[in-house]
Length: 265
Image 1 (tube, rainbow, N blue to C red):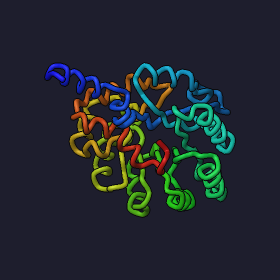
Image 2 (image 1 turned 60 degrees about the vertical axis):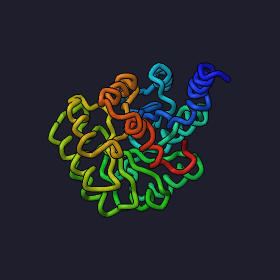
Image 3 (image 1 turned 90 degrees about the horizontal axis):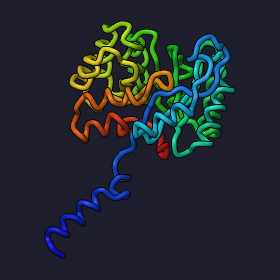
Image 4 (image 1 turned 180 degrees about the vertical axis):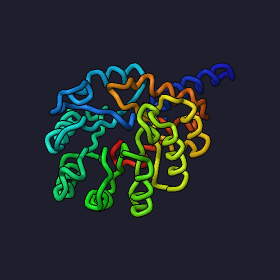
């Protein structure tokens, strides 16, 4: 084999499907799906998986973590998420969602069924988790994606439950409503080994850049908050961080893959 043909063979091998599969998948770790009961706004009425699937294809996103939109209670919506995942097993990973106050006393048994029988792989929260929730999560070995009322809440839970991995949604502040919370979020992620930062819906891009420098790419997890926010745009923000190929691979898929239960991806 000539030197020229040998180089061509190696180049084609590197571009082969097998080589492509060796790359960690791109995983959107924050996306809503299903129907809601309130029907007061688009994000409380319906979250279309068709939109999510289209955006995934266009952006090159391999898998997306989905969970219910806001509801009063979550037994039914969590079943809906499990059904969507069963229809698209190569596209979606399901998280349960619960309200620690409204569903108090029932979450442990509900979550165990949702994880062990329905195949959900994590928990999404909008309210501070109680010990009931945290004990159940620790037993099941699943991560929590938590959109905090305030970043300081993480000091209450991260040190008490070091065995639980917490992902802080929106770098601590949805749509950068309070930029000081972004700074607090970066500090929390640096302080606690079990706290990670979700990149979704950060409007003030320089705080994503700061998080990449100060907390580091090992602590950043790509999320979109789709389908209302566009995963194509949110993924491009990560590209704009201009990380090394290895560090970008961690942010867009490698980090969340480590936090998910074994066999989830």
